[in-house]
Length: 252
Image (spheres, rainbow, N blue to C red):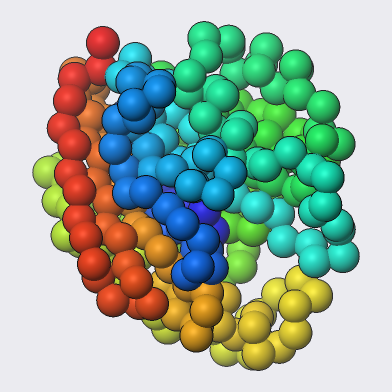
């Protein structure tokens, strides 16, 4: 997951609104969002290479989402797959604080983790070992820290905030339209994360398309104050839409 725009407890109808893109190499096998056969309470897509996931909710209202922290100088060999973090939190019953306390941050390369529920949401970064409760508001998270003002984070937050401020009834299509924005940032706005100028340009868009890497799925999660949840996902093959799944259910 490389871009998560979300609003928490700041809308008259919805406790939690999430609009997120997952960027990955096209060759990495993935299963679209579904209720897992081996963990029936989990609703999420699945990485078929390592078995974890990047964003999901549970039938009991647990929520978690992950982004990698971009630092190509850090080796990944021998580290635990970060997708297991989302899976383990969704499948378990630990509080967010207890879940984080039980982790060894050195077991993983850099990551950002959102975890909790529509009633209480937390953010954790394993490099800074920062754990904080998220107050009501609108946020953006990419491959640095929460609300780091990268161009696509700023743009995504603004578009989401502007839409939600003027719409009590939230529709899926406008949120997917936000996520489909493929405009790249100007060179003067680009971060310098050690991947070279050309790749910085390509990754600066909210929706990414390169010959072998790009946006594989766009996800929208809506959870209202009555416990009604919607999880909609669109999947893409080299930038072209190739599937859509929508799940509606009531949190137990």
